[in-house]
Length: 92
Image (cartoon, rainbow, N blue to C red; front, side, top):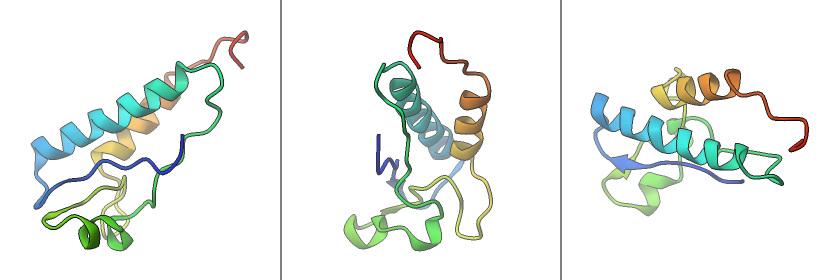
């Protein structure tokens, strides 16, 4: 899975960040449950250089790190999902 991001209407708030984190978690979960999904790549990593605001007016904050490279809720959700996942040997 490549170029994953989850944009939102600006400005971000806690509810939008929780929804964004759940969106990222669902994407990662779909990859982890798919036999031949061997990679999960986000489209960029910091909101500072995101392509979204220049393409979708009024939207942004689509990445897992904020503009100052701080971990956002989506980053922590992906990290927790990966830490708690053990792929069965038959799927590897």
